[in-house]
Image 1: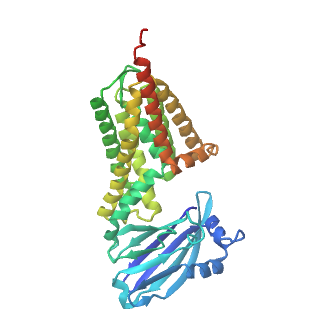
Image 2: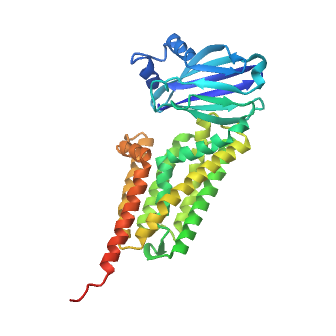
Image 3: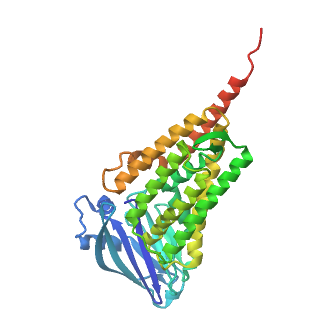
Length: 380
């Protein structure tokens, strides 16, 4: 409930829109007794917190019908609204929106724009620091925002992050049969990382594009379960190699599944089947940049630890923790049991820098202790 979705459709002299807000978020500003049936209360509130203007001044606002839907265990209220832009409808205009944001600092609103040609793109994210955005007649001008959306949704996706990080753990190792029995040099390790990253990229890019363009359609429920399974399989492979070079196969195969989940993000934003090719590719670029960022921040520490005797313990304990997290996700997404690790997951995503710093600190300690142990004892 920490974000709202605003969609604007540019139609000549009229700008039509909808805003979707979770009821618990609205209760933070309208009182705990607010319900989805309190249309007049919500309409009055939105009139004070939605505005659009051009050089000639503010545009008249009309609040329209309201509908509700159930998702993520909450009721969401969608409210239609429209601006009469008159002759200024084809020009740039300033869109202002701070519903809920004005009272809840961490709340955000994603603004999606569909232009006159039918192309749709995320135009920006409004926060308490950025309560307005300039809307251009052509949606393509928001490609930078699409890159940001792709990056952000990987950054906020604990399962995607954990899957990628788990695939990086075996990169410095060599599999002999069904066990890890050797270590690669730096060059070989980097080549292994490149193969994994490329395989994952190819896999998720194919299904992201196919699903976003509505060439294929898969229910989100099974996809989320399969993603949890993918994390579990990656963890098992870290403990005992499933097949030689298996991380490449796992990355490519389950990358197809993760791509469908990324496409689901676009659908949630209202971009399924309507995103322009530049917008779609920009979103995918954001995903790749997030992936490269994870590799750059995590792999150096993993490789440093792999040069010490600590790596076996780090590998096994880390994989066991990942496997527990995957089981928790699977049970939760199957409706069997609520994920007991959800608070830990939220904390790790919110403070992901702590994980990076902790891993780097562990690498420093492991390498330092190894060097101390290797130093000859002076003879007196």
